[in-house]
Amino acid sequence: MSNGRRLIFYIASLLSMLTLVNACSQQGSPKNPEAHLGLVSDQRIIDAPQKEPGSWLSYGQTYKEQRFSMLSQINKDNIDQLGLAWQKTIGGSTERMQGTPLVVDGIMYVTSGWSIVYALDARTGKEIWRYDPKTDRQYVKLSCCGGVVNRGAAVYKGKVYVGTFDGRLIAMTRRRAKKSGTLTPITHRPLVDST
Image (cartoon, rainbow, N blue to C red; front, side, top):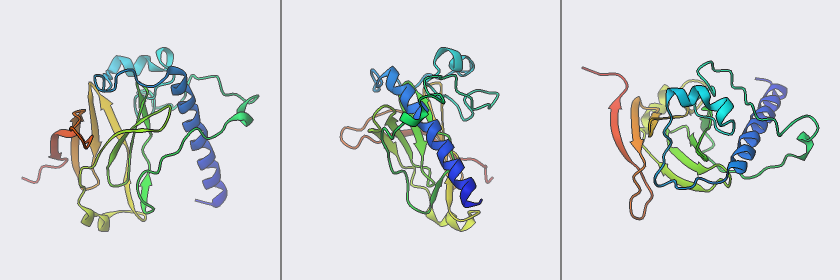
């Protein structure tokens, strides 16, 4: 990818993220993140662009994968007034972030290249929790194109899902440990059965 294309991609990604953050700040922080993880259903994904345009419930926004936001607060007349609301370093310099950040009920879910899942307050960027599946680092030798990559998390029917770089599918519910704020996975199975 040329430097010009890379810059255009970066600017477009930044504008999309700022649009989502701005919309989430209008909705406010999650009311009770302890009780509500994100009860995302098929119908909620279908209805989200019209009923909750500040949310981004699935990879492509809807099942049509159009990645179109109905938000209209940012337009050609005020785009020059945008600024950075917050930033968060996710992963290391050799990790690539290729998943779409999801925003569900004011919580943004993102993953690092090593499949670490972060839940962030979308308005402030404050980390609510993170889950490290302890991905086997030896699998980096199988990576394509220079580094580890994760395609993002999914949130569905009260669970957060992540496919790990070493070939596992993990589903988790929010169960806060007393001090660490870590999660307990409810499934931890290989994506391919080796038997």
